[in-house]
Length: 71
Image (cartoon, rainbow, N blue to C red; front, side, top):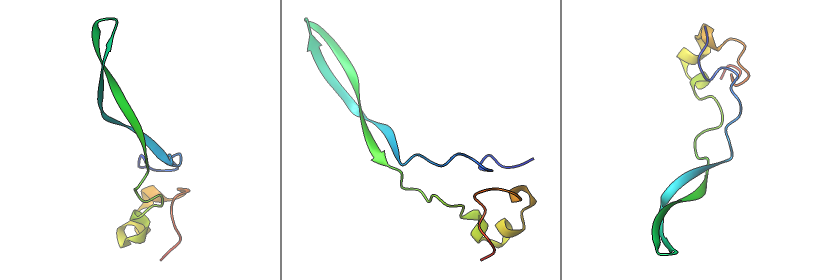
């Protein structure tokens, strides 16, 4: 058994997020539409668990493409 991060796909460079709502009035009908904006991905792209002593010895990380060499 491995972790969910084991050989996962790379993270997206940007992420669409909800940024409130836009109220509109079309043909005398009131509507609320979601407003979405795109933000850059800010989390670390590399495996930080590998940098710890626990991560270096964890057998569930063996063979993972995101695992870093001994630090």
